[in-house]
Every structure is written in structure tokens, then in C-alpha cells.
Image: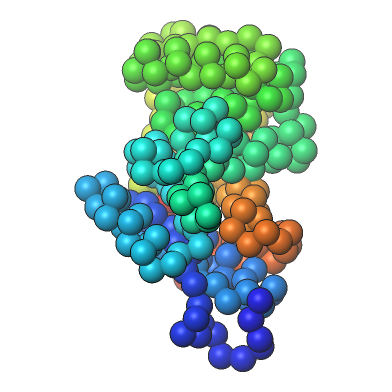
Length: 298
């Protein structure tokens, strides 16, 4: 705890966000608001980290006494070998989004699956026997298929690398999916047929951050669909815009961000996070600034 007064202080310890890019992120505003609310002598900073520099940046954070870090694109899988210990969740998901320095050294954990599962299950009512299709095979997609598997959905994974899509389908099955399938995302006929059998359509790729479109079938949804984009900035990607125009329910990824942030906060501080503060600060940082909606990120 810290005493009320000037902050940060000479004793303030850092928590960092590692990614490339990170300038779009609302995580510093979100976590620093929560640290101030609970008077913790911590400060959250975004550190743009090129892939070639990841090892040096992680080592430097440990050397200066950092409490922890979040890890985002493109480092969620490549940071794993730098950890001394991996949580069961990180082992299952195969990706790390949270680092904690403790008595055991550097611990890698994953809070993405829990954050997304809360939003989909508790807020959107997704669950078995709903069908869900996930576009992507990276670290975010791994968390998504675990979350959907735990909800008992029938999960289809679409990716440009069929072997990676097959692996993620197996991961969904391991997590509890009712049925699984894997598709080449370039096969528009098979993808369109799969989307037709699904209620939930998830974009777990960075496509859309700079205005890119997804493969064509993902832009042909209908009123029976729920579209969920893990991207939160910009809050409306071409995928979500097309979904809304077609009458589908559409959601950006800010809810998932708040959910995973709350779980990471708990790991770093040992305290229950002030979730309303996290949520309000994230929304204010995203929607109340002059350039809201013009920048990009996950």
C-alpha cells in the first residue's frame, strides 16, 4: 500500500505491457486508475517491444524489480521459454499473457481464456449446444477455443495453416467442446457452410486493426449470428460493421480486455480488483479521447 500524496514515488514498482505495437492500448489508463483507487505504489507502462528485443526487455524488467507484466501480440507464445514456471492455465492454452516475478522466478500465466469465457458465458449467454467458429491460430485464438470448449460449444477453427487449425481443434476438445472441426480459412465454401451452422463467429486475428477485411464468408453473417471481435480498438472493425449491417449482434473485445485485466491484477497484487474502476477507465480511454476509433489494437 502507499500513503496518499505524490505518485509515482522513488519506490514505485513498475508493471509493464509488452507488445508490438502498444501505442493504442488502454491498459495503462485502466490499471493505473485501479492502482490509484486502492492506493498501491505501482505504475503501469506500455513498452513497445520488437520481437528481437523481447528477451532483453523481460530480463531488464526482472532486474529492476518489476512486479509483473502483460504480454500481447506478437509475444504470447514466444515468451513462454523465458519463464521459469508456467501455470497450468498457460500450459493448457499454450500461450502467456501475464508475467509475475515472485520467489520462484518468472511465472507465466494466462488470463485471456477466463476473461473471454466470462463475457461469452455470463454476459452473452453463449454455451452448449451453440456452434462457434474461430478465425485464427495464434495465442488469442488458443485462449478463445479453450474458453469455448469450457462452455461446451461445438467449435470449428479456421486458419491458413491446416495443421495449426487441427491442433487448436484438439485443444478445444480437450477443454470440453461438444464437437470440433478444423478448416482452411481460404476454402470459402467450407467456411461459409460452417458459419451457417454456428451461432457465434469470433475473429481472433489482428485483421481489422488497420481496416483490413476478413475472408469473405465472415462478412456475410445474418440476424441469427453473434459476431465477436477480440480487437477492441478500433471499436468497430469492418467485420463488426458488416455484421451489424446484416442484422447480427456484434461486440468488440473491450469486455474481454477488462476480464483478463482483472485476473492479471489479482495475480500481481493479491487483492480483489476494483472491476468497475477498470471498466470505466478502459471505456473512457477508448471512447472519450479525440482520436477514439482511429487507432488500432487488441
